[in-house]
Image (spheres, rainbow, N blue to C red):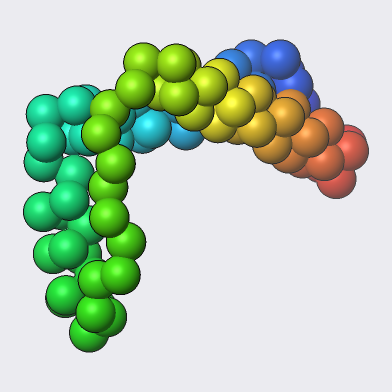
Length: 87
């Protein structure tokens, strides 16, 4: 098996996780997030207890930065582990 490039894998996972959170931010900005989260809890038989706050650009950028960085680290480490195991 071929070794994975840790940097490329990290970027892919960062884009995936950051992209999911970008979609969430679009829902928050559009005012659709509360309805979605209420529905998700409802279908899991959970009484909704969370309230979605109003959209703030600074906090949105922080969310994207943190989740993308965590995604990169996860992808990088997983690629290193994968390559080590499949030598």
